[in-house]
Image 1 (cartoon, protein in one colour):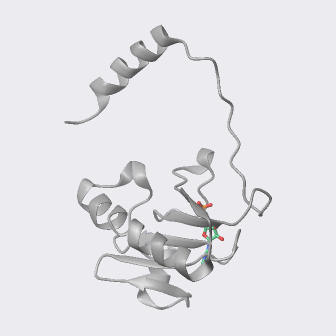
Image 2: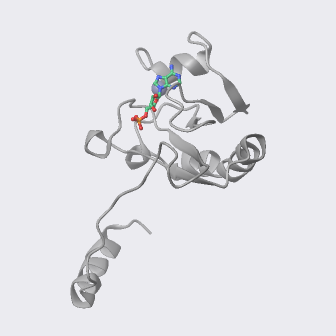
Length: 139
Ligand code: AMP
Ligand code: ZN
């Protein structure tokens, strides 16, 4: 897609530090290097984000994750990894070509952290919400 920075990386018009490529996906180092080895995995098909992704594109994209993550861990010596997708602006998406962040983790005080609030469980509300969502999920 014209004007998409990640499509331009796929076509080679913009350079990238490639770590994996096949017919369906490309993985390369994120310029921001939140931690050493921070990488992005993208489908070669232009889709906006996970909310916009077909099962077919999801299968080819997500199925590559474990082997790329393992290679990244081996090369960097990371102890673990955060694997993140930001879908839409409210969730922090800034580049609107779907991508999965692989952020290798080295210690509690490396330059990445995950913070979210944990609420006391309300089992009635959980049950009702689950039912409502399940109805909306395509079979
Ligand atoms: P997000 O905020 O989830 O949309 O992430 C977009 C990511 O793309 C950011 O972490 C940027 O650092 C990264 N990024 C933007 N342009 C490039 C580029 N040309 N090469 C590598 N990473 C990029
Ligand atoms: Zn694109």
